[in-house]
Amino acid sequence: MEIITRLDAAKSGLKRYYTGKKCKHGHDSERYVYNGHCVTCAINSSLRRQAEIKQLMAEASLQHSS
Image (cartoon, rainbow, N blue to C red; front, side):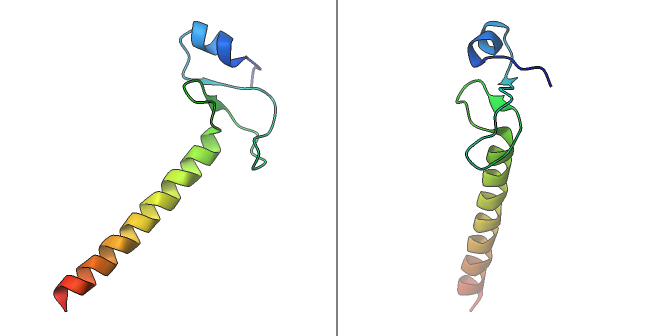
């Protein structure tokens, strides 16, 4: 991947950029221009949230059916 700064990526109209540095969780991946967050961390966070919501919905369904 080509190393590009967040500012240069924003000027070029890109949505993601690559620093060549690992995030605080050790991922060596692109980051989002709009917030600087690691793409891999964002995906993992989204998957965790989806699993939590699925669990909450299942629990709510059991409570209403009893």
